[in-house]
Structures are given as structure tokens and as C-alpha cells.
Image (tube, rainbow, N blue to C red; front, top):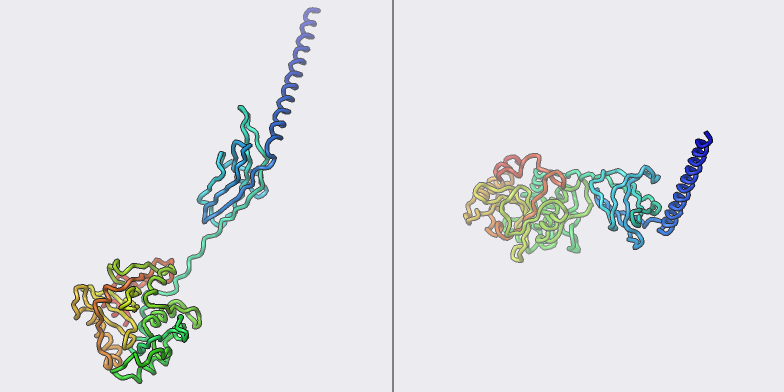
Length: 378
């Protein structure tokens, strides 16, 4: 019994020594850890966020005393953290974020020493709000309405050099920024004879329209429901490219034009033409019915066929409709044909009718021939 008691005492002393050793070792390690942690930057590098659409790029400046960095998503207070990325770089990109939602991010740095890893404190919470999707602009008009508008001055509006421009000749005048046709146009037309000479009426800007004044007036009336806003009159050769540049459609240079569809705006890009016109439709023989303001004035006209045949389907259609629906005009000015240059010298702006721009085509005019379009219009 006495030997057994000694053995128990010996065991208890050994346990005490072991516990003391563990305590000392733990204390030593703790001192070592905090000493090392204290040697790190107590603040994480500053986190910056740059967003674009539904993507954000998080970035920070590298610290040579750190091995790497950890990027976390978190809540507004910075808790409930979720590790997104451990990296030795200085940026991290996050894609496909939800629109209308705010995200929060934090950063901390770390340093490896041997098999141990030591961390800085967490940096400030950085909020990133992803903007809601922009509401697509509601289309303002249709191809059919645009052509209906284009027909309103036909057969009752003379060609006036500078007509539709302002007095300074720098852009749209009052008439080209007005909803509806000006009564002065028809009054002036009625006073003219069959030998009308536009060179004698230059800059009587309120009495009629020149080519760009006419197209600018058509566009204004398609885009607006009230008068007096910004106009669309400019040099004829600029119109197709300018309108395409506004996101209204696609620009096609003159040597790449392959076909013609309802509403296409055709701008001359050469000095010998200096003209702009609107496509009504293409005929089966390749000729084109158009509407424009060209001496003597605003009317329907037809081009030859691509091979040069003058008595084309387009010329016949333009003649038929001008004679039937605009007899006063046709009696004075029966010529409804235009030259082959109309098929060779003009760049094109084709309207975007997808529903994301300003015009749509619910009537299917873009898939119709000129005769089908004219029949529907009239």
C-alpha cells in the first residue's frame, strides 16, 4: 500500500509538470504569434471598386510586406463574410452581378512565415451598387407613318433653294420644326407656272423646301408631336451618316449598297449630286420609287433599272400615282423619271426596326415591293 501511494504521488507530479510545460509552450507560441501579427500592417490596403454595367473590378495597391490578399463579400456591416478569392495580385474582377442590387466587399492581407499564415485586420467595407437596366426608348414612329408624313407635301410644295433652313443657313428653320405642312407652301405652288425656275426664288425659305429641308421636315414630324424643338436639317451629304450615328439605323457607303427598302434615306456623297431622298420601295426590275424635293418640287419619281432601262417599273408607278392623286401638279410638271446616278452615287441609312430604336415596321413595309407599298399608302 505504501509503495502504491508513492507511485500515485509520482504520477501526479509528472502530470503537473506536463501541464506546466504545455502552458509555457502555449504562452510562448501566443507571444510569438502576436509579435509577428504586430509586425504586419494593422490596416489592410485600401480597396477600390470600378464598375461597368454588371461587372466590378476590385483593386488595391500591393504591400511588399504582405504575401497576398483575400477578397470577401459581406453584408453592410462587414460581418457574414464569404471568401471570394485569395490572390497575390492587386485586382479581382466579378462578373454577372444583378442589376439594381448593392454588393459589399472587404479586403485583408496576409503573410506567410514558414508553415504559418498571419493576417492583417479587415479593411473598410466598400459598397458597389449595380444600376438598374436602362429602359429602352419607346419607338416614336413606324416606317408606314414616316412615308405617310413624306407624302403630305407631295404635289403642292415647290423646290426652294434654302427652303426649310433658318435665315443664317446653319440648320432647321421654323417650317422644318413645325408639325404639319405650312399653308404657305401650297399657296406659293398655286401661283407657279409650268416653266417654274427655282434659280429665281433662292432663299425664299418659307415658300417651299429644298432636298435636305424636306427630309429634315419629314424626320422632325416622325420624331415629334409638337413644334419648335431641335431640328434635323443639315447638308444633304451628311444626313445618312448623321442619322445612323444617332443610333437610328445602319450606314452603308455608296459602293456597298445592295438593295433598297421602304424608308431608306439616301445621301449623295459626291460633289456633282449634293442631294438626299427617301426610298418608297424597290420594284421587281431593280428600279426604285422615291420621294424627294428636287426642281420643280416635292414629288414621287422613279429611277431606271440597274442596267439603264429608262421606262422602268418605278417610273411607270411614279407617273401613275402622280397623275391620279396629284393632277394639278402633274399637269404642270409631268416628268417623273430620274437618272441612273440615283442608283450609283448615294450612301444609305437603313432604319433599325428591331424595336430598340426610333422606328418599327409592324406593317411589313420593308418586305414589300414598291407597288405593294404605294397601294397600301394610297
